[in-house]
Length: 258
Image (cartoon, rainbow, N blue to C red; front, side):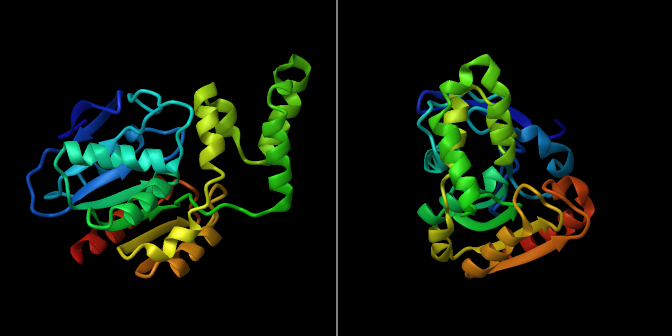
Protein backbone atom coordinates (compact mmCIF):
# COMPACT_ATOMS: atom_id res chain seq x y z
CA UNK A 1 0.00 0.00 0.00
CA UNK A 2 1.40 3.38 -0.96
CA UNK A 3 5.10 3.53 -0.28
CA UNK A 4 5.07 0.33 1.79
CA UNK A 5 6.74 -2.89 0.66
CA UNK A 6 5.50 -6.32 1.73
CA UNK A 7 8.26 -8.54 3.09
CA UNK A 8 8.50 -11.98 4.69
CA UNK A 9 10.97 -13.73 6.97
CA UNK A 10 11.14 -16.87 9.10
CA UNK A 11 11.32 -16.58 12.89
CA UNK A 12 11.52 -19.82 14.86
CA UNK A 13 10.09 -21.75 11.94
CA UNK A 14 7.12 -19.38 11.57
CA UNK A 15 6.59 -17.30 8.45
CA UNK A 16 6.18 -13.65 9.43
CA UNK A 17 4.81 -11.03 7.05
CA UNK A 18 5.56 -7.35 7.56
CA UNK A 19 5.42 -4.09 5.64
CA UNK A 20 8.17 -1.49 5.62
CA UNK A 21 8.65 1.99 4.23
CA UNK A 22 12.39 1.25 3.80
CA UNK A 23 13.13 4.90 4.50
CA UNK A 24 16.68 5.51 5.65
CA UNK A 25 16.75 7.69 8.74
CA UNK A 26 18.75 8.33 11.88
CA UNK A 27 15.47 8.60 13.76
CA UNK A 28 14.06 5.64 15.69
CA UNK A 29 12.03 3.15 13.67
CA UNK A 30 8.27 3.19 14.25
CA UNK A 31 7.13 -0.41 14.80
CA UNK A 32 3.36 -0.96 14.77
CA UNK A 33 1.78 -3.92 16.63
CA UNK A 34 -1.94 -4.49 16.02
CA UNK A 35 -4.56 -5.86 18.38
CA UNK A 36 -6.03 -9.34 18.75
CA UNK A 37 -8.09 -10.50 15.78
CA UNK A 38 -6.72 -7.72 13.59
CA UNK A 39 -3.72 -7.29 11.28
CA UNK A 40 -1.38 -4.61 9.95
CA UNK A 41 -4.04 -3.63 7.42
CA UNK A 42 -5.94 -1.74 10.12
CA UNK A 43 -3.02 0.68 10.62
CA UNK A 44 -2.19 1.47 7.03
CA UNK A 45 -4.98 3.87 5.96
CA UNK A 46 -4.13 6.10 8.94
CA UNK A 47 -0.36 5.83 9.33
CA UNK A 48 1.22 4.91 5.96
CA UNK A 49 2.08 8.49 5.02
CA UNK A 50 1.74 10.11 8.45
CA UNK A 51 5.39 10.22 9.53
CA UNK A 52 7.69 11.31 6.69
CA UNK A 53 11.35 10.82 7.50
CA UNK A 54 10.68 7.89 9.80
CA UNK A 55 11.35 4.27 8.90
CA UNK A 56 8.06 2.44 9.61
CA UNK A 57 7.47 -1.29 10.07
CA UNK A 58 4.03 -2.89 10.35
CA UNK A 59 4.14 -6.50 11.59
CA UNK A 60 1.41 -9.10 11.17
CA UNK A 61 1.68 -10.87 14.52
CA UNK A 62 1.83 -14.71 14.34
CA UNK A 63 -1.64 -16.14 13.85
CA UNK A 64 -3.02 -12.98 12.23
CA UNK A 65 -3.08 -11.43 8.78
CA UNK A 66 -0.54 -13.09 6.50
CA UNK A 67 1.67 -14.51 9.26
CA UNK A 68 1.60 -18.19 10.20
CA UNK A 69 0.04 -19.44 13.40
CA UNK A 70 2.29 -20.25 16.37
CA UNK A 71 1.93 -23.29 18.58
CA UNK A 72 -0.70 -23.31 21.31
CA UNK A 73 1.77 -22.63 24.12
CA UNK A 74 2.41 -18.98 23.31
CA UNK A 75 1.76 -16.08 25.67
CA UNK A 76 2.68 -12.39 25.71
CA UNK A 77 6.33 -13.25 26.39
CA UNK A 78 6.62 -15.47 23.33
CA UNK A 79 5.07 -12.77 21.13
CA UNK A 80 7.50 -10.21 22.57
CA UNK A 81 10.47 -12.48 21.84
CA UNK A 82 9.22 -13.02 18.30
CA UNK A 83 8.98 -9.28 17.63
CA UNK A 84 12.46 -8.75 19.08
CA UNK A 85 13.81 -11.46 16.78
CA UNK A 86 12.19 -9.69 13.82
CA UNK A 87 13.90 -6.45 14.83
CA UNK A 88 17.25 -8.22 15.17
CA UNK A 89 16.94 -9.76 11.71
CA UNK A 90 16.09 -6.36 10.28
CA UNK A 91 19.05 -4.78 12.11
CA UNK A 92 16.76 -2.36 13.96
CA UNK A 93 18.07 -1.31 17.37
CA UNK A 94 16.22 1.92 18.15
CA UNK A 95 12.43 1.70 18.21
CA UNK A 96 9.33 3.66 19.06
CA UNK A 97 6.82 0.86 19.55
CA UNK A 98 3.21 1.69 18.70
CA UNK A 99 0.84 -0.92 20.13
CA UNK A 100 -2.93 -1.18 20.08
CA UNK A 101 -4.77 -3.36 22.60
CA UNK A 102 -3.04 -6.79 22.56
CA UNK A 103 -0.19 -5.18 20.60
CA UNK A 104 0.17 -2.73 23.48
CA UNK A 105 0.68 -5.54 25.98
CA UNK A 106 3.41 -6.95 23.72
CA UNK A 107 5.03 -3.52 23.52
CA UNK A 108 5.02 -3.25 27.32
CA UNK A 109 6.69 -6.64 27.63
CA UNK A 110 9.35 -5.75 25.05
CA UNK A 111 10.07 -2.45 26.81
CA UNK A 112 10.68 -4.29 30.08
CA UNK A 113 12.99 -6.97 28.67
CA UNK A 114 14.82 -4.93 26.01
CA UNK A 115 15.04 -1.35 27.34
CA UNK A 116 18.04 -0.52 25.14
CA UNK A 117 16.04 -1.32 22.00
CA UNK A 118 12.77 0.46 22.85
CA UNK A 119 13.29 4.21 22.80
CA UNK A 120 9.69 5.13 23.58
CA UNK A 121 6.17 3.72 23.68
CA UNK A 122 2.92 4.87 22.11
CA UNK A 123 0.12 2.75 23.56
CA UNK A 124 -3.41 3.00 22.17
CA UNK A 125 -6.00 1.41 24.48
CA UNK A 126 -3.36 -1.06 25.60
CA UNK A 127 -4.21 -4.43 27.11
CA UNK A 128 -2.18 -5.89 29.96
CA UNK A 129 -4.20 -4.81 33.00
CA UNK A 130 -6.38 -7.73 34.04
CA UNK A 131 -9.63 -7.42 36.03
CA UNK A 132 -9.72 -9.09 39.42
CA UNK A 133 -13.50 -9.40 39.48
CA UNK A 134 -14.51 -12.53 41.40
CA UNK A 135 -17.44 -13.03 39.04
CA UNK A 136 -15.23 -13.07 35.97
CA UNK A 137 -12.66 -15.31 37.64
CA UNK A 138 -15.29 -17.89 38.56
CA UNK A 139 -16.96 -17.87 35.14
CA UNK A 140 -13.61 -18.05 33.34
CA UNK A 141 -12.39 -20.95 35.47
CA UNK A 142 -15.62 -22.90 34.98
CA UNK A 143 -15.76 -22.18 31.27
CA UNK A 144 -12.19 -23.37 30.70
CA UNK A 145 -12.56 -26.49 32.81
CA UNK A 146 -15.82 -27.44 31.09
CA UNK A 147 -14.67 -26.69 27.54
CA UNK A 148 -14.76 -30.39 26.46
CA UNK A 149 -18.36 -30.62 27.68
CA UNK A 150 -19.27 -27.58 25.60
CA UNK A 151 -18.50 -29.56 22.45
CA UNK A 152 -21.87 -31.26 22.97
CA UNK A 153 -24.22 -29.50 20.55
CA UNK A 154 -27.01 -28.59 22.97
CA UNK A 155 -24.50 -26.94 25.37
CA UNK A 156 -22.81 -24.73 22.79
CA UNK A 157 -25.28 -21.93 23.42
CA UNK A 158 -24.39 -21.98 27.12
CA UNK A 159 -20.69 -21.75 26.25
CA UNK A 160 -21.34 -18.69 24.10
CA UNK A 161 -23.32 -17.04 26.91
CA UNK A 162 -20.49 -17.62 29.39
CA UNK A 163 -17.84 -16.22 27.11
CA UNK A 164 -20.07 -13.28 26.23
CA UNK A 165 -20.18 -12.51 29.95
CA UNK A 166 -16.39 -12.50 29.87
CA UNK A 167 -16.26 -10.24 26.85
CA UNK A 168 -14.54 -13.07 24.99
CA UNK A 169 -16.10 -13.09 21.54
CA UNK A 170 -12.49 -13.10 20.35
CA UNK A 171 -12.12 -16.51 21.98
CA UNK A 172 -15.13 -17.89 20.13
CA UNK A 173 -13.91 -16.50 16.81
CA UNK A 174 -10.41 -18.04 17.08
CA UNK A 175 -9.08 -21.39 15.86
CA UNK A 176 -8.53 -24.06 18.56
CA UNK A 177 -4.79 -23.30 18.85
CA UNK A 178 -5.40 -19.55 18.97
CA UNK A 179 -8.11 -20.10 21.59
CA UNK A 180 -5.48 -21.67 23.84
CA UNK A 181 -3.22 -18.68 23.28
CA UNK A 182 -6.09 -16.26 23.92
CA UNK A 183 -6.98 -18.02 27.17
CA UNK A 184 -3.36 -17.63 28.24
CA UNK A 185 -2.78 -14.01 27.27
CA UNK A 186 -6.02 -12.72 28.80
CA UNK A 187 -4.89 -14.12 32.14
CA UNK A 188 -1.45 -12.45 32.02
CA UNK A 189 -1.35 -9.38 34.25
CA UNK A 190 1.51 -7.05 33.29
CA UNK A 191 0.90 -4.65 36.15
CA UNK A 192 3.95 -5.90 38.14
CA UNK A 193 6.37 -4.94 35.34
CA UNK A 194 5.01 -1.43 34.79
CA UNK A 195 7.32 0.29 37.35
CA UNK A 196 10.30 -1.22 35.47
CA UNK A 197 9.44 0.71 32.33
CA UNK A 198 11.57 3.84 32.10
CA UNK A 199 10.84 4.81 28.50
CA UNK A 200 8.87 7.94 27.73
CA UNK A 201 5.33 6.74 27.05
CA UNK A 202 2.31 8.28 25.37
CA UNK A 203 -1.01 6.68 26.34
CA UNK A 204 -3.93 7.33 24.00
CA UNK A 205 -7.43 6.33 25.11
CA UNK A 206 -11.06 6.71 24.12
CA UNK A 207 -13.36 7.72 26.95
CA UNK A 208 -15.96 5.21 25.74
CA UNK A 209 -13.63 2.24 25.37
CA UNK A 210 -15.51 -0.89 26.44
CA UNK A 211 -12.68 -3.37 25.74
CA UNK A 212 -9.86 -1.77 27.72
CA UNK A 213 -11.61 0.83 29.89
CA UNK A 214 -10.16 4.24 30.62
CA UNK A 215 -9.41 3.10 34.17
CA UNK A 216 -6.72 0.83 32.63
CA UNK A 217 -5.10 3.85 31.02
CA UNK A 218 -5.20 5.74 34.31
CA UNK A 219 -3.47 2.83 36.03
CA UNK A 220 -0.77 2.68 33.34
CA UNK A 221 -0.16 6.40 33.74
CA UNK A 222 0.21 5.95 37.49
CA UNK A 223 2.55 2.96 37.30
CA UNK A 224 4.80 3.94 34.36
CA UNK A 225 7.30 6.59 35.44
CA UNK A 226 7.31 8.80 32.35
CA UNK A 227 3.81 8.36 30.97
CA UNK A 228 1.32 10.92 29.71
CA UNK A 229 -2.34 10.03 29.17
CA UNK A 230 -4.43 11.70 26.45
CA UNK A 231 -8.16 10.98 26.45
CA UNK A 232 -10.39 11.42 23.39
CA UNK A 233 -14.04 12.25 23.96
CA UNK A 234 -16.74 10.22 22.24
CA UNK A 235 -14.17 7.65 21.16
CA UNK A 236 -14.03 3.90 21.67
CA UNK A 237 -11.44 1.13 21.51
CA UNK A 238 -10.27 2.15 18.03
CA UNK A 239 -9.58 5.80 18.76
CA UNK A 240 -6.98 5.97 15.98
CA UNK A 241 -9.88 5.44 13.58
CA UNK A 242 -12.45 7.52 15.52
CA UNK A 243 -10.14 10.49 16.13
CA UNK A 244 -7.59 10.15 13.33
CA UNK A 245 -6.51 13.80 13.01
CA UNK A 246 -6.22 14.42 16.75
CA UNK A 247 -4.22 11.25 17.35
CA UNK A 248 -1.83 12.03 14.49
CA UNK A 249 -1.22 15.50 15.92
CA UNK A 250 -0.52 14.12 19.40
CA UNK A 251 1.78 11.41 18.05
CA UNK A 252 3.69 13.82 15.83
CA UNK A 253 4.22 16.21 18.73
CA UNK A 254 5.39 13.35 20.93
CA UNK A 255 7.86 12.16 18.30
CA UNK A 256 9.37 15.65 18.01
CA UNK A 257 10.67 15.30 21.56
CA UNK A 258 12.14 11.81 21.17
